[in-house]
Image 1 (cartoon, rainbow, N blue to C red):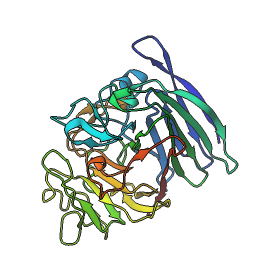
Image 2: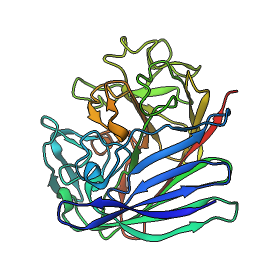
Image 3: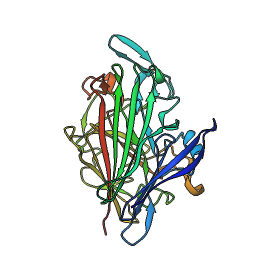
Length: 347
């Protein structure tokens, strides 16, 4: 096991950024960028002695300061869409930037995942031979148009059994919306290996939230049975993708009762690498990267469908649908959530 902090380049304002590399005794390595607290690399053994980087990412800090594809991003204050870029809370109307048509997406502009975070604690070794690091960010009152300040901590822990845990804590100073997620793009064949549509996905989800052409939920929560959104039995991401539109950008309703449970399994079709997703979040957004068009690590050109994001979060536009679980937090009632990506092989 080793823990290493490396230089990762400079921000546009001259500040230096670091890359924290966590590794375990099994050979797995995880890179975490100080810019955005973004996941930068995840190297996983494939069962044949090879280490495969299964995460789309960039090579240096400048690439994360300008990250329109959200590669490896920690998204806040509210992940996903808010219809009309406005919401009411406590009798006050709050207006956000309209950065996706008439709506707000991922709380932009001035995204959290393009800011320089602090290394709040660590990197440290864990008792089982893994490693951990905590990144911190203060989102001030009025940041991005949201009420209250939020003190955020995101802890990455790599365990000896090849589990990568992302633990979020966010303490607000006033009642506000908090909905954090990890927008990592996974390609279990390798980050530069092309399409993920041959990957098999299985979901513990019997329902999904249909959305309009702007990806705003209708408010319904429908059964997946008989639809292209039925992943209860594993199937390839490409099998029903055209019936779902131009691939998937869909929220699935989970039934984990706010406990950290397995909600998804993804399997690479070339390497045999598998990834279980465990979370206590109420929803999982599956996005097959329809709009990917980016230059990544080693000059790799990431094209549409070259990665899949499995984003554990509250449902999109939840604040406007009272039948959805609500991402509203207040002083003394912090946002706390955990998502784990557990890697193995099918060989």
